Length: 337
Image 1: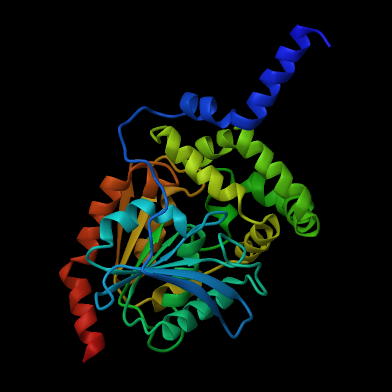
Image 2: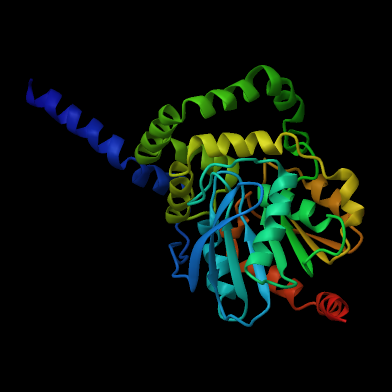
């Protein structure tokens, strides 16, 4: 083998192992923002619900403070809330839940959103968390709405629904007709194949994370271009370590989602957040939620689908204003009476 071939092999090997770094630099802004990471928790563990689903949970913040519960989106984990955790951990009791098949939670027994909503009720009861604000992002927001609209008096004083649709997720994207046409012949069979052959997809996912190819899809689907390189790598890394069979199960679960008729049953204050540059969720979805949920307020963030990371400072201010709003405090007092 000639020296030229050796250099080519070395360059190829370096790209396959470290390509994510130069690609993330090229795709991202150079804003000075604190790098996301892993913050220590006050306690952590696993909880098993009657559905058979097992959840990894982490608690942070003062034990006796009012609680915020965080439900992440598809192919993410509780780690996505780094900036919210850092911002609210001194004042609020925080609960981070990894959905089944995401993060440290094992694959789901049942990924139906109605089941996940019932699981949430059980998790809160097991942890003795009363009257929390539930903050759900994307898929997590879908579960949040199902939970808040459940029968009887729910254990919740307010909800934050961030970048979440109210029905079949393809109907509220920028390409609804195309995605709906592909669902039965392509998308559902593909997800079923991923469930049967998780090792193949795990290898592909990890390789594409290391060489940086998966960063392209994350940049153009989930960010608006103002994310930092470390933020882009952080979120892509979370996805790379998620089990493919768990993600496929969860995706199939939200394809059957529809909360349209349940929205008027949500009686707690609701903050609806959408993003101006989000290709996954059209703005009309947020407007619709505001009109259908009795006590809802819709705000727009000039960001992408992962505004919770890309524009965390502005987003956290919006959330803090909602948490301190008089109507939320009044609702809590009504529940305690």
